[in-house]
Image 1 (tube, rainbow, N blue to C red):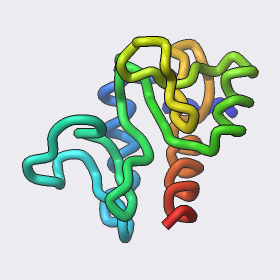
Image 2 (image 1 turned 90 degrees about the vertical axis):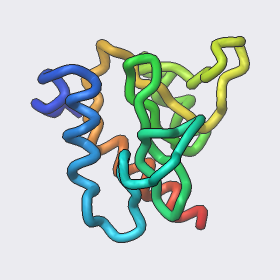
Image 3 (image 1 turned 30 degrees about the vertical axis):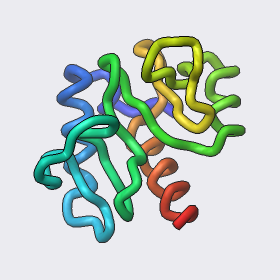
Length: 119
């Protein structure tokens, strides 16, 4: 799914636009609203305290069911996320390829809904 927002701005600007859509959404914590946040997921979007979207390696990363991640990887839209770059990717984390035309807003909402359903 192509979205005009995907072709504009830097990754940081695009993620800021994405985060702005979640300001005021009940249960969602946006970057910069958690004092003292450090480590994995700092600057990411959370629902119920659980991370669902962030930027890493200058790319969008979202948490989705493993089967969905596998399908997106098979379609050539990105890869399994390997935060340590040691060849051990996280099964439920997807990092969007720079050339992908996936809609970041739709992916983030899918990730938010997935994490919300787990709670």
